[in-house]
Amino acid sequence: LDKLSVQDKIGLIGDAAALAVSGDGTTAGVLAFLEGFSNEDNYLVWSEVLSSLGKIRSVFSDDKELSEGLRKYTLKLVTAATDKVGWEFGPHDDYLKGQLRALLLLTAGLAGHEGVVAEATKRFDAFVAGDKKAIHPSLRGAVYKIGIKNGGKPAYEAIKNEYLTTTSIDGREITLQSLGRVQTAELAQEYLKFGFSGKVAIQDVHSVGVSLANNAKVRNEVWEYIKANWD
Image (cartoon, rainbow, N blue to C red):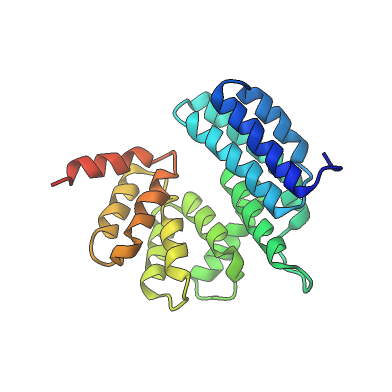
C-alpha cells in the first residue's frame, strides 16, 4: 500500500466499500483491507477510510454485539496514528495536518481511547472553567463532542451556553454539531426542543437533526420528535 499514490488509495478504498454495498464484495473483506491503513499519515486517505468505516458502523448500529466489535476495531485501527499525531500543533504543520489531528483525535476519543478521553476531558473542563485558550480552535469540535459524550447533562449545558454566548464566526455551527453527541433520550429530546425554540437560526436548525441522526445512540429520538410534533 505504501507504493500507491494518495489518489489510488482513495479510489481503492471507495471501490472496496462500493463492492461490499453491491454484494460483489464482503464487509469482512473491506474491514480486512482497511487494516492496512493503520499507519497512514495522509488526511485525505484517512477521511476516506473513516467515512467508509462509518457507513458500516451505521448499518450495524442496532446490533449491540456487532456495534461493540466495530467500536473496538475502530479504536485499534486509529490508535497508532492518533498517538503519533498527538495534540500539539507544530510551527510547520500545514492545514491538512491539522485536519488529520482533529479527525483522528475525535475518532479515537469517541471510540474510547483512554488517553485521548482523559486529555480531552481535562481541556474541556479547563475551557468550561474559563480558560478559553485550553482548546486549540481546530480541536473544538473534537473536544466538545468527546466532552459531551462522557460528561452528561453538565457538559451538554456548558456547550449549549457556549452556543448562546460565542462570538466566534464558526462557533455556533461547531457547538450545534457537537450537542448531537448526547447519550440519553432525554437530552436528545431536550436538544430537539431547544433547536425549535427559536433560539437557533432557521438556517441552522438542520444541524440539530443531522447531528442527532448521525449518533446511533439517540437517532431514533429524531423520528419520535417528528411524529409527536408533525402538526
